[in-house]
Image (cartoon, rainbow, N blue to C red; front, side, top):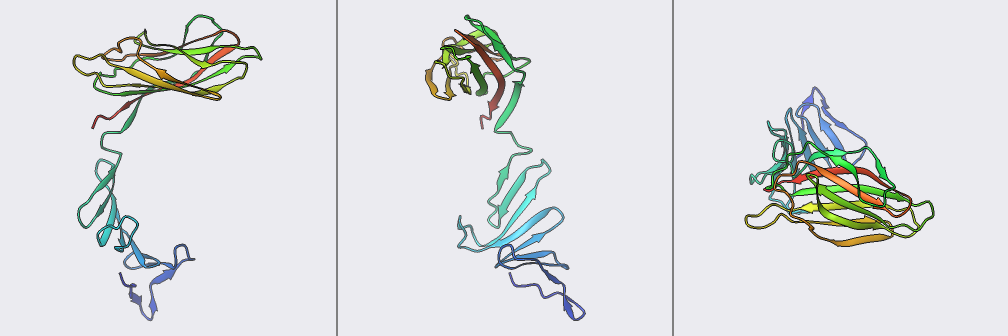
Length: 239
């Protein structure tokens, strides 16, 4: 796009800013902003910009428009009507269903309930991701510290080793609950990412309920104190 030539009287309405990307300037009459060889136009409800065929993604020549829809989606569109929409009014890819952010602890040598996320109603058609932050304080003692998981008050992921030895470790435990398929149980898998120790191979110990109404983290320790800091329960979009 060529430079604007709008003038009022004998002087141009174009104002030059300090260089950001080459030469940047804005026309006070039409709103065009010039940045190097490209032009950006700011309107009441959208932004247009020019580009060339040699762009990074090699888009078709013409204008690219950035705008928001009535459903608060941010959309980028080119002259070929190739739209790309980002979140907002559509279905969210990741939805927070509930969380527990109050720290709980145990010194028990048998499994004790720690963090509980209740008041859930997650249908079997929705995949679930559970993220759990835990840590252990051993006071110099050699200790085995373990976490487990209950859904609807029933143990579905048996005790898994979170930390051992004398180090005070902290880390992330996450679980994935798949969609329930007809004639098949609903499976659960998981992994622990802990300082100095990673526990793979978690597998379903029991059938996961079709509708999940509560998530409970359990824990035990042979010495010291085991803490459950935060638990977040998300669901994933299915389309």
